[in-house]
Image (cartoon, rainbow, N blue to C red; front, side):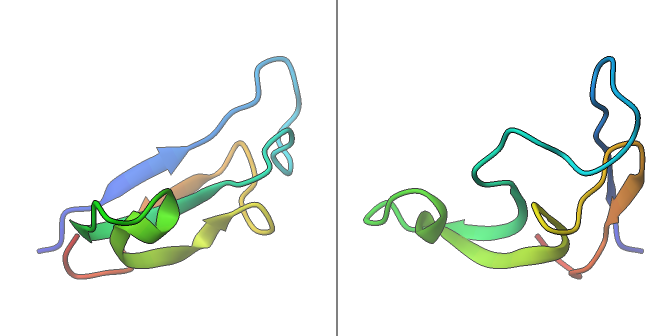
Length: 70
């Protein structure tokens, strides 16, 4: 059985909707690390297509189970 993380984002004092105020926002399934790189390129693994600036909405639950391992 795959263990999953459940993620919920809320905006204090605002109705549920698209998140605002971030230049970058993403979730990454990390399987390793490369200290020679900086920022996101240092992570080995894959991005989650369901959690990014274009797709994520506050007030919803996101089940992080898109990969078998992380």
